[in-house]
Amino acid sequence: MTLRLGDTAPDFTAESTKGTIHFHDWIGDSWAFLFSHPADFTPVCTTEMGRTAQLANQFERRGVKPIGLSTDTAEEHLKWIEDVNDTQSTTLDFPILADADFNIARLYDMIHPGESETAAVRSVFIIDPDKRIRLTMTYPMTVGRNFDEILRAIDALQTSDNRTCALPADWNQGDDVIIPPSIPNERASELFPNGWEELRPYLRMAKL
Ligand code: BEZ
Image (cartoon, rainbow, N blue to C red; front, side, top):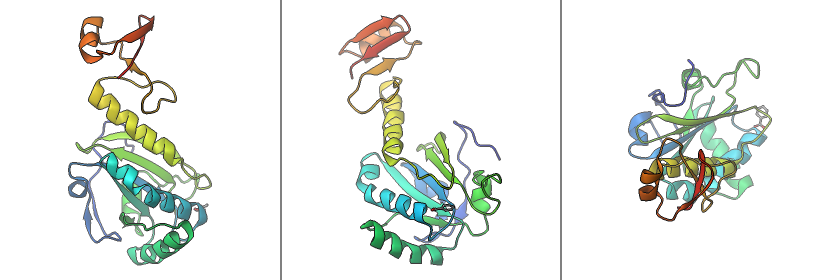
């Protein structure tokens, strides 16, 4: 199944390290960061799980619930979490979905046969409180994800939603934002009272 931005994230019920999860109910009014891994007890995955655990406060500040997935059982995940905590000096407290039968991996198109027929690639789905897929990333098995970029992308999505703006290349919190070309200057004056610089009629950089 091909999932596109704006699609409703497929709902599912699955076991996890925190018990049975009904995905949409579990998301509730939060955002979700769903990320898959090829397998438990593997080195790159161990660092990614640890990094997510270390960033728990950063996700919480943004109203985002992390949830991992690998195509192993909840019992294996629970043993692996001990290694993650030990080697990455953290306490992993978010759920990891059990997907030994590949049900969720197939639902979310996480199996890329050119990489592996039997394990998920490193997929990311950022899902909003309306359960819409807002951002995806796909990394190969050998390359760990950049969690600064994941947080930056979440900040950008939430800023775009809350402030009716777009964000330029390499934007970070506090940087100028872009006034979308669809917004006429009169409306922009209401939305961006701190003013803007007009580099071109289609490129207006505003301070928030
Ligand atoms: C890893 O997490 O290190 C890994 C997992 C599967 C294939 C290659 C690397």
